[in-house]
Structure formats: C-alpha cells, structure tokens
Length: 397
Image (cartoon, rainbow, N blue to C red; front, side, top):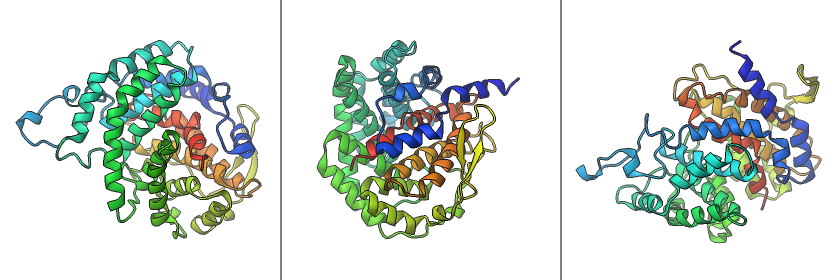
C-alpha cells in the first residue's frame, strides 16, 4: 500500500512528452494553456509543501557571517522574510513557488492561504531588513549566485503578476530594494569572475546565469542582459566534448553539461546553437530513440537509449544525497529548454525529449514530502519544470 500515493501523484502531474514536444515544435515558448496541462490537484500538493515550510523556522541551516556579538540572532530576526524552508535560498524559491502557482491557478483552494503566506512574508518592513542584511559588511558573497538568482526570479514573477493583481503589485514594490541590492552584488561580481564554476551544486555559474538572464529580459534590463550574454560566451562558447559520462557527482542537483547547454540556447541564435551543441554534446546525435508504449495510459513516448539515464537517490532522508532527486527534475527542464532552442526539424529533438520525459517521471515521483530534507525544496524544482518557466522566458532572445 505504501506505493499507492506515489502512483496517484504521477497520474496528476505527468504531462505526456507529445504535449510538451508539440508546444516546443510550434514555437519554443510556453503556451497560455499551462493550467490545462497541469492539474490543480498536483499544484495543491506542491503548494502545500511550500506552505508547510515558508514560516517553519527550524531546522535551519544558516549561512551567516558574524562581525560582532550583535550579529547573533535567530533566523526570523536576521532575515524576517526568508527564514523558513531550512535555508535562505529555499525560502526564496518557496515564495516563488507560491506566487507562480497562484498566478497559474488563481481560483484554486490553495490560493487564499498562499496569498496570506506571501502577504505575511513580503511586507515593506521585512524586506527592508532583508535589504539591510544583504548590504551589510562582510556579506558580499552571501547566497551568490544561486540564492540571489532565485531572488531575481521571484522579482520577475511578481512583476509579471502585478500587471493584473493589486497584491502582487504591492509585494513587487516591497521587494524592489532587495532586488536592487541583489543586482548590485551580481553586477559587481560578474565582471570580476574570471572562470566558470563547473559543479553540480549551488555555486554552478551556468544555472545562475540562465536565471539571471531570464530576469534581465523580463525586467528590460538590457545592460545586465548584455553582461550575462558576454560572460556566457567568454566562459562557454569554445567548449567541446563535455564529459557527460563523468556525471553525476554523488551530491549533484544540477548537471554541469546540461546546465551549460541550457544557458547557451538562451544566448545563441537557433542555428548557431545547433552547431555549438553538436560540438559540445556529440553523444546526442549518436543516441538511437525507439518507440515504446507506456503500460498505464497507452501513450507513446520516446525511449532515449543510454545517452542520459535518470538517477536514484540512495537515501532521500539525507540532505545531501537527496540532491539527486532534484537532479532528475532540473535535467528534465533543461533538456526541454535545449530542445526548444534547436532549429525546427532538428533530428536530435527526439532523443532529447525522450531523455526529458524519463527524467520528468523519475523526478516527479520523488516529490512526496516524506522527508523534509527534500520536501523543503523539491516542490520548487517540480513547479519550475511543469509550468515550463525556463522554456518560456529562456526562449526570448
């Protein structure tokens, strides 16, 4: 019996690859019909994961530099908007999850408590203290780049939502000072970053640059976008033969190779990206897709062969080993983005979308909330995937 909830969960949240592929083939951008592709019951499961943690202060893994005894304080005093969900960055993207889902399902049963949670956190006073914290001496590298990139994603979500929602407009205004503080930190750091950070955890530069570029384009910050595009080309344009066989490392939740390709499809025109990808990941062209039938719904999907297989966490209750569940989710959305960035009719799309679907299924099956070590953050990764946030924003060159 213990497997039944997982099976039901998958019935709600698995979107057939044919649906996603047709969306990508027709334009490479997110359709406005996202809510018809993503069931409200699945959205409620993800919303409940965030609602259970955004104001849950402990356990808490704090990343805090102290300059004196005066800096000793509980998380709710140090960062009163983003003190829950175990760590600062998870709290930030937990709030992003709630905003994203309320925008997608404004009349869902979870929408009122989600709005209340956002209203409680994103006050002017709370975010003034967050801004003070970010700008304090000795915190130049605080949550850089991962957490700051997610803060910009939250700002972008609220900005888009504020076009037709008064509460979102107020929260976006409240967040603006912290948004500007994050931008100042990143604009000061990026020109000095001499080499990319090629790991599968928070410090990875490719993933953060992708989030930041999507934000810059949403915000109309052309100067910031040009800086990011320039650094992406400096770091990655000449790369070839990424050693995908070396992945994953045991605690990855991001793929260095796939994450880099997902960034470059945002930067390069479609034809140029196709040529770059052939040199960077030639193993995709060698993959042989085969047609199979699923047992539960008879829906056809592509089997990707062996070029990129999903992974299994050996212990989802371990906060580091649980990262591998997130790796399946991030690979899935990155692969969908890569497919969207290729020219129409590119033969590699079948193998890429096959791998995306296999990772989607494996990743979503792990988002159960059974262990707080994964439950406090995997919901955000799942929502980023199923609402195709990166495919939509990342496709706008």
